[in-house]
Image (cartoon, rainbow, N blue to C red; front, side, top):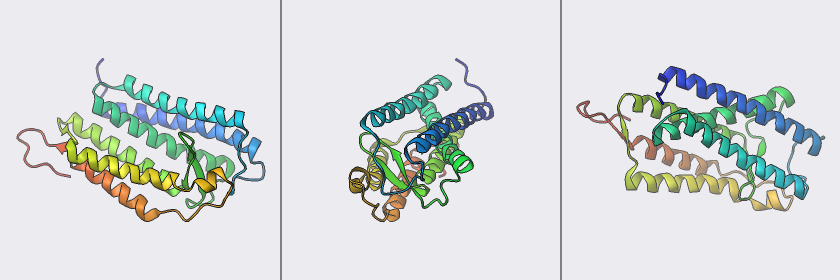
Length: 221
């Protein structure tokens, strides 16, 4: 399989992410009309067990679709990883944009949302997943662009350790407040400080993993 030019590839990935975001957002429009006719606010009204199981299955299928698209779009593990990040980031951003256009929600990026349900509910203000989506999409574009110019990408032990630790820290900010998702409580203040530390750690781990082509001089961030 011949890989398309970078601009064409980015257009294809963006189109997929936009379309997928609209589909996902439309599903949530119907869900909120069914379960939260008075508006989506915390404390949450829990979903019925059967509907919750359907939602978990749908979210798992969403990730499988993104992975499958990345596997079929390009060759090379890092190129596929980059496509996954771009598609995920665009999908998530368009998802929130579609909800805002249809429902006028969120009214602010500080509004709280349920982000994911596997293995337990993730919650956080919209600013956090939107920020992560921008970071992922930007990192994916940079990775594809540099790989197309012959750059290597090797996280190494330090890169993997820093990346995993930063990811775990960000996930903890989403998963720590179980009372707000499992017991109908109001959310505790979000730990923006730890989220930003985690994002910085991911960015450092990502940038230090690039290896400039032979003969091109020292690597630039």
